[in-house]
Amino acid sequence: MAKADFVRVMFNDIAHKYDLLNDVLSVGTHRLWKRAFIKFALKQNPKSALDCATGTGDIAFKLKESCEGQVVGIDFSQGMINFALERARTNPLPVDFKVADIQKLPFGDKAFDITTISFGIRNVENLDLGLKELGRVSNGVYILEFGQPKNSFFKKLYFGMLKMYVPIFGLISKRKDAYEYLIASSEAFPSAEKFVDIMKKNMTFKNYGYKPVFGGIAYIYYAN
Image (cartoon, rainbow, N blue to C red; front, side, top):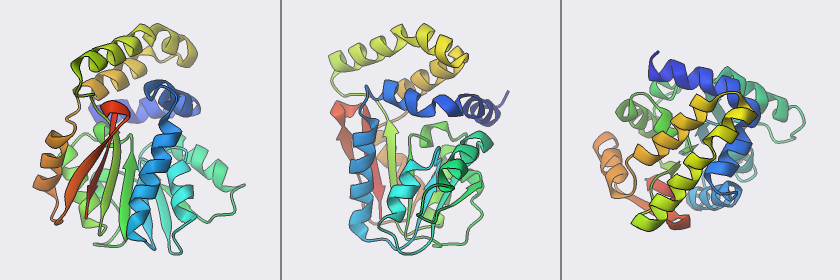
């Protein structure tokens, strides 16, 4: 099975456990990280935003609190979009949610002031193509993604702890392979300077950089 197909089926299956998954991978702090991420992205005072790999829509709704223009959330998992649409029914903030693939975004060039993606870029099958599309449709790109702590002891301790809990994750979600994949992808994904170099190769912005989160368990990346 191709990576894209595996990831799509996986997220459809674990959509109802998605927030729990992020709680575990972030040691219970991903909500704080997302708040910092949103605050950082909003420094550019965007009027419109596209949130990719939107999941249950939490980032998109927060962006809409400050964006007076259109905010769209996309995900290639129908299961995730179903959850976001369910939340939209009781949320007064107007956010458009739709199924779409980051590798072929159905929007024109520079259609949005910013694009954001949290905990999703490492799941894109063609990373170069995905980054090109993020840069094409917006004037600024902001990414929050798991990575690896630079401190070798902390890195070993963190991933060792996650792997110990894989059997428990499997019992909860009935998809042990999903948790194994998500942990392995976080452990292997290029982070910090390596990821910034990949961004530079695929985008045409002037400014690039990153900020480590919680000792490098995750990183906030930007290009504008």
